Length: 132
Image 1 (tube, helix red, strand yellow):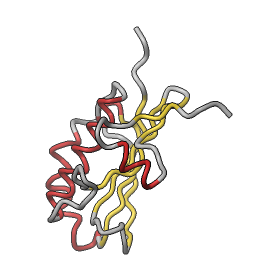
Image 2 (cartoon, helix red, strand yellow):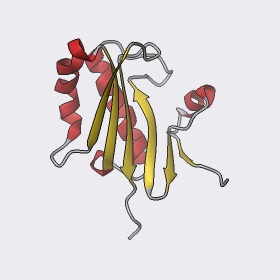
Image 3 (tube, one colour):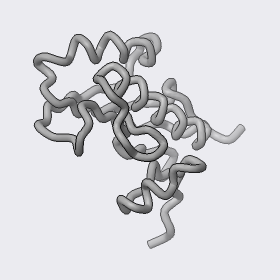
Image 4 (cartoon, one colour):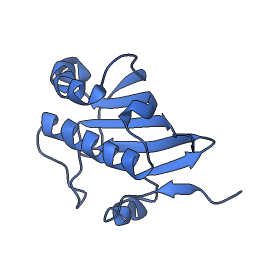
């Protein structure tokens, strides 16, 4: 097997190494981004659901940018949410600020009972821009 083409953010690589995964991996023209939560630079959770969603998207967008992408390149989204029945509307009110215009990426939302101390997680697959 060849080495993975991993993407890390400067200053945050230690968080991923401690937990033994890559922030994202490039493969076959796509970028596979690990689930992003509303974590601060030290790995602690941002407080409050809306703040966590904003921070998760800020973290996601930073990884996409590091790989030369933006959210416009995202083709598939999976969202994990604690108690989506009572939190979906609050989450969507923030998410729409980041989502962009139609056509939208494919989306799966999964309700979970635990996210390691977080309330929201987003993972995506993005198409890498082709070299011109």
